[in-house]
Length: 181
Image 1 (tube, rainbow, N blue to C red):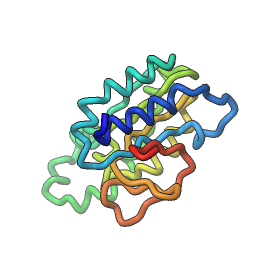
Image 2: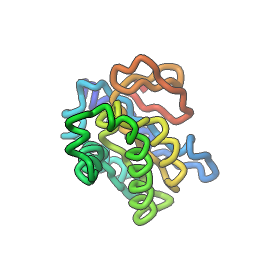
Image 3: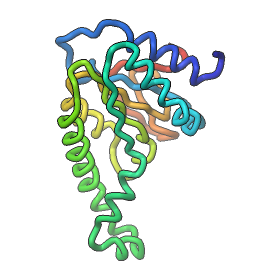
Image 4: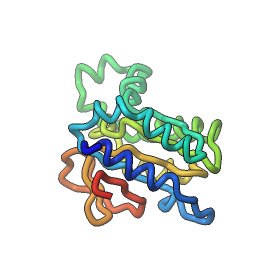
C-alpha cells in the first residue's frame, strides 16, 4: 500500500473511524480529502473503498457527484444554442448555475441524510471556471447534519486549499486529509 491513493485511504479510514464530537460547527464537520489532480480517474475507481471504510465505521454514505452538473444545467437552458454561438453571454449566468446547484444538492441532502452519516461530494474539479467550490462548500456544509466529505483535486497548505492549478486558494477551517496525514 505505498501508492498515494492507498495512503490517502488509510488516512481517511483512521479519521472517519474515530468518534465524532456532537456540538461542532459546519466548518468542523467538513472533511476535505485532498488528492493530486493526476489521480482523478484512479480515485474514481476506488471511491467504493472510501464508501466501504465509512460504512465499516458505522456511518451511512450519500454520494453526490457534481461531474455532470454544469452540462445538465446547460441542457435545460432555453437559449443554450445562443450561448454556444456567443459563450461570453453565458458568464453572467454562472451565479444562477451555482445557486441552482446548491438548491438541488440541499434538497437531495435533506431528503436522505442522517446525523451519523457522510455526504460525499465528488467531481468538484468539473466546477472549475463555472462555480466557486469554496462558496458551494460553505453553503452545502450548513445543510449537512453529519459530515461533509469533499473529494478535492488540488493542494492543501496551511489551511489554504487550491483547486486544480488555481493561482489563488482560499482559507477554510475544515479537516484536511492528505496522503501525508
